[in-house]
Amino acid sequence: MDTKLVFQDAAGLPTPMLAVFAVDIATGESEEPLPALLVTSDAVTNAAAKVLASGEFKAALGETLLLHAPNGLKAERLLIVGLGKAKTLSVNEIRKGAGTAVRAAKPLSLRDMAIAFPEDHALSDEHLESLPGPLMSRALVEGAELAEVDYDIYRSDRKDRSIGTLTVVAKDSEKSTRAEIQAGFGEGLIVAAAQNFTRSLVNEPGNVLTPTVLGERAAAMCKEMGLKCEVHSTRKLHELKMGAFWAVAQGSAEPPALIVMTYEPKTAAADAPVLGLVGKGITFDTGGISIKPAEGMEKMKYDMAGAGAMIGAMRAIAQLKPKVKVIGVVCSAENMPDGKAFKPGDVVTAMSGKTIEVVNTDAEGRLVLADGLHYAKTLGCTHLIDAATLTGACVVALGILNAGLFSNDDATCEKFQEALKTSGEKFWRLPCTDDYKDQIKSAIADMMNTGKNRWGGATSAAMFLKEFALDTPWVHLDIAGCAWNDENKPWIANGPSGIAVRSILEWVRSYSA
Ligand code: BES
Ligand code: ZN
Ligand code: ZN
View 1 (cartoon, rainbow, N blue to C red):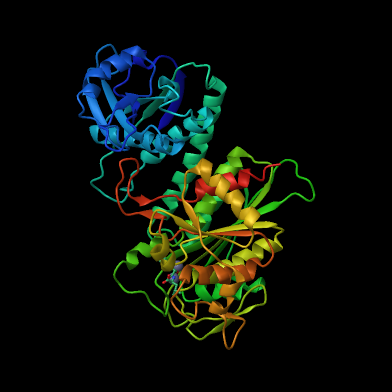
View 2 (view 1 turned 90 degrees about the horizontal axis):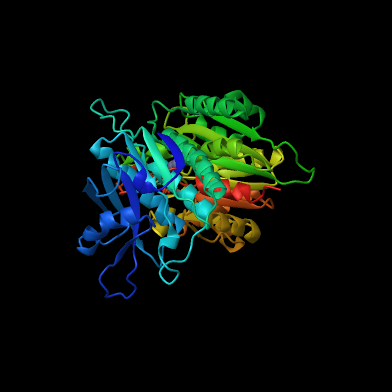
């Protein structure tokens, strides 16, 4: 999609479809919805006046209403897109609203469309608190770009419903300057492209996206974006004594991939932080010898979503150029049952020297990450963040709306929570304090790879990882429940969500000196 930004009155823009946003300004619980447009153009307001007065449209989030041949507008159609209650409006609703507009256009096979930049000052302060222009602009572009993608690339009967051109039409105003809107717009394009890149990786089936192919895709991205990239395999794992990572990899005919992507800012002080982004890249998780039930196993192709998030984040980092060094480390393997596979009861030695009793070969993510986290530290990382589809227990605990957040350092964790305000993603902090350490105590090794019972399984996994982060400030993201959308939403296709890319990126930028 070619997305451009123009500054003019929306009413004068010739386009097959102009989308405008509406909010519900009714305040009381029992009051009837009162939709109001976020535009100051009289022509647009007049064109929509009758239908808004009819009560047919409630301005609920994700609701749309289409008018043909709107009076007084150069547009052939006017699409009114609800953003929900005015009182609770944030940039997150604008992201979703823009997505809703794009996804409403696709089934109509429209090739071009326009979205009017929301003018929050169209309403008085009593109804709506004003929102920051650059963030609105960025969220609008992100939402539109994320919504444009459908995951039907393997269907022969797929219809090309891509939107060729999206014009964002903004009016000059004293509130948000052109420069601010332009800056947010440019950032939105970069961030959304990165998130869509992640989604395209996560969407791939396991037979297409093997660890080797993941390495190739990461390397190609790095080459395009000017990042340094190294992709290693079996020999390097042995050289580095990555016994935990290798234990998982050894049961597959597909060789593992250790992917190292480096972004270096032009200048950095000697004592500047170095951020390590570590991703779980299991391209298919059968569970290994502790094999998973057949039902739903096909979904385990997305067990590399943490790796996908890190590769996507690196892509945007290369373009946004924060003033902080960032190293992305992806540990990719296939978890298979085989004559050569690791077994329950095996004791393996991680790169850090710690010994691990393997109790369940399906708890493989923490094994590959153990070596990934330690390795990132040997590369000089002073702060670590990992993302992984790590535990079903996290999905049981938090459902599919919030992903799990764990940390050994409050300040670092708070920086991540601050980043969520911009990204709009939801992460809920769960504990991993030392009083949980007993959970992973082993009788015969330094630790075991599962908890001693089922309770608090997401925390047991985090406790395991913490043994490898040690005193390096570390944030762990368990994205098992949020990396794949099972339901179609008005603003995004079902399939890979690309969760964590935006938040990791903002967290990284918060260290930019
Ligand atoms: N990849 C799975 C976790 C997962 C579950 C991701 C559901 C997405 C959706 C992970 O490798 C796994 O199997 N974890 C086990 C750990 C257990 C054996 C301690 C789990 O959660 O059941
Ligand atoms: Zn598993
Ligand atoms: Zn897994």
